[in-house]
Every structure is written in C-alpha cells, then in structure tokens.
Image 1 (cartoon, rainbow, N blue to C red):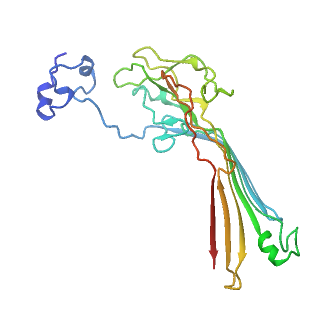
Image 2 (image 1 turned 60 degrees about the vertical axis):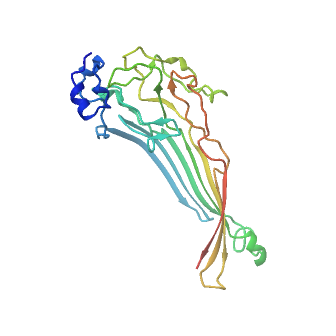
Image 3 (image 1 turned 120 degrees about the vertical axis):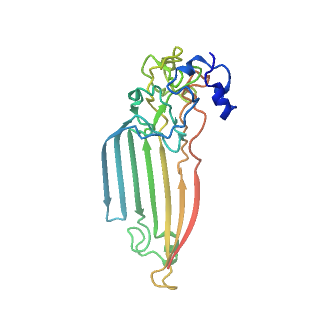
Length: 297
C-alpha cells in the first residue's frame, strides 16, 4: 500500500523500512504503525507459585561419622522464567510470548522446576590408627601413613528440568508468537535409543496452521536428563607440634564427577527440524582429580 509516513521518516531515518514509498498493509493496521520494532525491557508482569515438601536429617555419631540427608519434592508454576543466564544446557532458553494480549497462555511449569531432588553429604573419620578402633597401639611411623585418614562426599540425584518446546517453519501473525500444535500427551522414551528419539511419541507435535497460535504449552511435563553426580575426597592431617603448637599439614585428594557418570544435554526440542528429539552433547565434564596441601599454623 502507499506509505503515508515515507516522506517524514525518510527525512530523519532514510535507511528505515518505513522510508519506502510503499509498505505492507498490516503495518498500517498496527497500534503504532510509525514504528517497526520495540525494545522490550522485561517488565515485571509475571507471577509464580512454589509448593514443596522438604525433608532433612542430620546426625553426628560417636564413631567419627556425621551426615546430612535432604529430599525435596516440589513444583514451581509461573508465566516467565529462564534457567540460568538466558539459556541452559538442560534444554531451556528464553521463550517469547505467544499472545501479548493474553498472558495466561504462558502459565505453566517453571523452566527451572525440578520435581525431586535427593542429596547426601557426609564426613567419616576412618577407624584406623593410634587410639582408633583398629590399630590402637600402631607403630608411630606406620600410623603416619595409615592413621588419621578421613573421607567426605556429596551425592546428588534429581529429575532434571522441563523441556522447552520450540517451532521452526511456522507462520505467526505479526506481533504474535507461535508454538507447535499438540494432539496428545508427550512421553519420554526410556528405551535404548532415547538419545536419538527422546520422545516415545514425537508425532503428537506438528506445525500449526498459518496465523494460529498453536496449543502446546510453554514447557512440557517431560524433563531433560536428570543429575546423578558424586563429589568425593579423602584427606589426612599430619601433626607439626614440634614446629609450632597446634599446627598441622593437611593432604587432600578430591574428585569431581568421581564415578565418571555422563550427564547428557536436553534434546533438540524444536518441532519442524529433522533433528527433533535428538540429544547431541554431554553436559558435564569427565572425572576430574585434584591434589591439594594446606598448612595450619
């Protein structure tokens, strides 16, 4: 259509799309047709609710063992959330609004919702060496190598975060978004081929008709691969009272991802791509070891 803003805008911004003699018809029907885009400053319009059962048990035992066990069963619902700084290897990224006039369509599981989390941490002074259960009268030289060792660990297991669904190849209305069309409840594939077909029924997703919103929710009730990680260490203290009263040297051997367990990234969750449902990468690092020494004086 003829562009009534062409002359005025060309005078101040000749490179603008609205400086041309013609313009697409829908542009003139927008609430502010003299603008081509807006800078959104993340207005705080969203709400969230968090409900959880949190259990913990802590015990210090007389035989040198102390531990802390925690379990959380929770659910977070909101209209807007991002796991981390704009994205996450667990299958999330910032998600655009589908209908700016109906923010209720955004309400669903939070992108950082983790249904269940179990953690165990402990410190255990091994019962070997002088004055201990085994080797109470051990030779001092032998005790310097065998006695006084301690171990600690942190074990974490969780369900992972929700998969965020995306769309490629659709046709949205101007200023609106578009999500996939969903015809059934998506189910995670637990078979041996889950890394190449993460969803057991991927056919429940399809590209919606042009200029429709699509009915898929912002986040799915299918989670990315969860965490199963152990951080373990052993350490020993060597007394240095001959140099200074109360001083000692501590030797530590620490291992991150001690069992070398692979944690995988979330799947490609963009409907309309050939690799939809494929897991491409490992999220964590292989086992790492470090040795440290610390002098207390």
